[in-house]
Length: 433
Image (cartoon, rainbow, N blue to C red; front, side, top):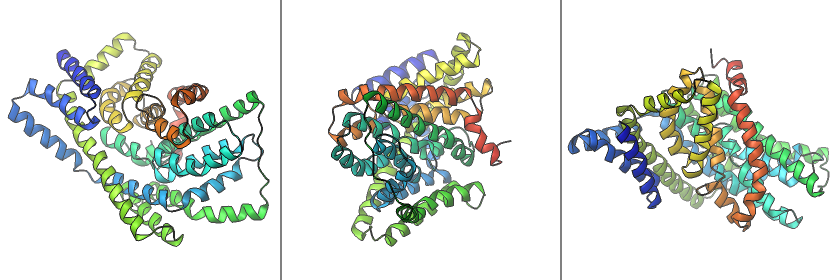
């Protein structure tokens, strides 16, 4: 079995370095290990069955529906309304556009469930304003990159849906509620760094005061967009509909809202549907390919071997959680969020459950780690997209991100070792015993 682990790791690394897509890399490396244990014909049959069975899941339908909802929002004129709404929260904070960027990403990310979509939609509006006011654009880029991932923690979130499926049916409603406080803390942590940076650089760019009348108009225009969160999350928690049905309602609501705003044409809608099909196909094919790896992990007893190895180092839950966090932070630098969840949930979940960690709590730990990975080279999607928006070089942006990383790691440790941060809201909502 140890040989299986070694071959799986080596082949996975080799295929990844050769530039193969992550889904093909996962499938091929897993299949090569599978034929070590089963005849070729049986391995092929087992692989196909695993892929088909993994997609035969009603909750998975929520992923393309939330992708569709997010795509409609991205082109439906919602970003500017959320940015204007975010201005109401910045008050007299120095360099307010940084803070508006963070808050707008939190709102838009929560509505769309897509980090990069939020980063692009908000960034395209905020960045020209920052350039006009002579902001430090390297730091502005860092703020947009790091804050866009908050929406992956604040529900509705596709990564929690994937985790729920892989973890054996952990409550999606509980996971959604568990993500609120960690996601908000992430945003507040980034805003704290913005304040400290302003003080350190002795810069204080202010904005014009918003009158009460202007504030009421901004709130009125933002309410329809914000109602989406209330409708979807409220309906799921109250048991009016499932997460999958909630995703369908989110897509329909977004479509109606965009039509009311007259910002969505038939041509744009066709383009959105095409993009949704492509992105959903990629995501679901990844889930299917990962099912082969899940099968081989289970067959080779790899989770048990890893658990034994970790517990042999220490039986102290603090040490084990620290080791898992370090591994996940490193993994996040090289593997995208969805495959990382599909691969490492079956490995680490039995370990953390054995030391008394609730699956919902671990889900937030896992998601938080991988959100940080989205910002880091060499494969951090948010990093490359953020730099392309402002035209800044990665080597200029990374130093500006280091203080934010430091704060986010501190918040990660709080989320890890203070379970109530994740479990408080699900318990209040009656979603956990």
